[in-house]
Length: 191
Image (tube, rainbow, N blue to C red):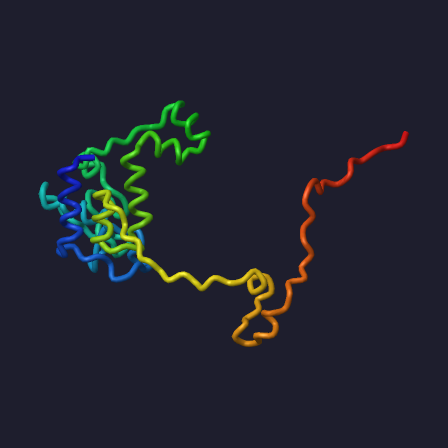
């Protein structure tokens, strides 16, 4: 993937010139650009349009805008500009993928597979978060408070000692699992 183009893309994702959809709806799902906003691939298409004097056109069948006759995925010219080569998988790719066709295509086209992975994340992330992911920056993990540890008796029986302290003090009478070999006896046939 052309790193100069990726840098332009991540800067544009953070720049604010290209608004993201306010929400994903039936009307804009899968659209590069639908007038109200862009998806992450729509941003790279708009950068290509600016560089090469392209034009967004209204698709006659829906409200989506199309770029180079594409409304949902990157046109071949944009893939070429990004230096993403698409190849048919070879037999070696199919063998490595254990005949999983999608996996074979991913092995043959790692940059394309990466784009698909980014698209799967994009609906749950902001453009700035996606720029970090595209640049390979690790996501910041938010520390969530862990629940208080429970006794085995509370876990097994759902006993809340704050409601009835007498119940939590009772001895656990669950029978122990025998140790050693507990396999069933071998079947025999009398002839």
